[in-house]
Image 1 (cartoon, helix red, strand yellow):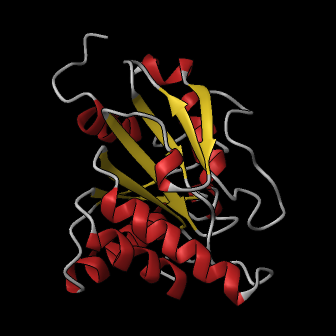
Image 2 (tube, rainbow, N blue to C red; image 1 turned 135 degrees about the vertical axis):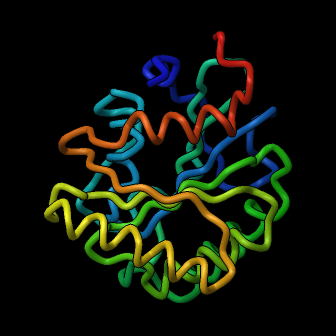
Length: 203
């Protein structure tokens, strides 16, 4: 576990790629609305209110930047997707913005795709995966709300998702996670460490 994430701090929001801050390396968190993305960020950073959480789908509408450890190293909370309450035009705007960010944002080194372990790989998740695959960033799948399933079912779901991704030619690491019980934090930190800091872990 790396305590550097516990001092993460909000820096700014951006509504488009040109307004993103200068960055050396960043990792983006993406996920369907209500998949537990903001809660996962808060659990990973041990800060209850760092990323905004809401029962209202689609609350996060901007790219929210949080600094971690070294200068110009960030975690980025992306807008949620897959919510029915938003118009088709808004969904198209979101898709265009995400495609631009995921394919043209040079400092982006990794994407953490957050999915509810009870409902993984929805159509919306596959659409996000298609966008992620167009870019150069690596992929880590975080199956949240693991506390909702028995251990055997959690393991089975992880293996099932891993196989479906492999069959689709998608390279990814994968883990189960529980914000409620703070399970899987060390594994998530390990992935973030390798992407953001590499061998520079003596922060």
